[in-house]
Length: 149
Image (cartoon, rainbow, N blue to C red; front, side, top):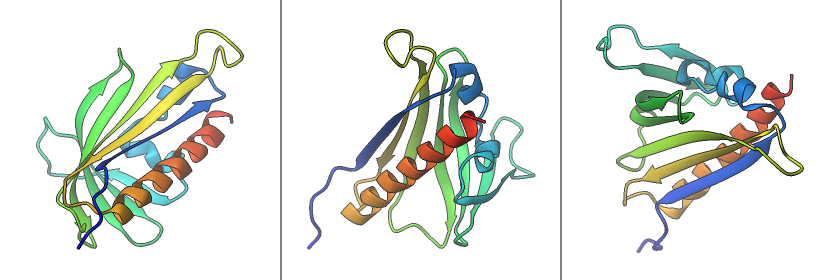
């Protein structure tokens, strides 16, 4: 019997860089420029011209094809879903959003607040949710390093 668990995760960080510098890094095909777990991120050739699909090859051998679902340069967010995985995922689906906000006052004025959420299908177990949490935390720490260069 599985343990009931929330099927969403939300991690956030204040990145000590202006929104313009952080937002420049938030492109699916360029996540490998900041996320140390990724070996490469390349457009999938032959996909529909209206669809952006990127293959992420992780250094541990995992490969994901992610599809951009939404993108707003006005609201500063990108939403993507995993459409294929090798090895196969143990759950049906996940939709993730990376959202950036300028910090406009206080001690972090001029920096960027970043949220990275994941909404998993109901068949995702507690281990999947925890893994999603820690991967997002690691990626946000990597983003902070890349944006400060």
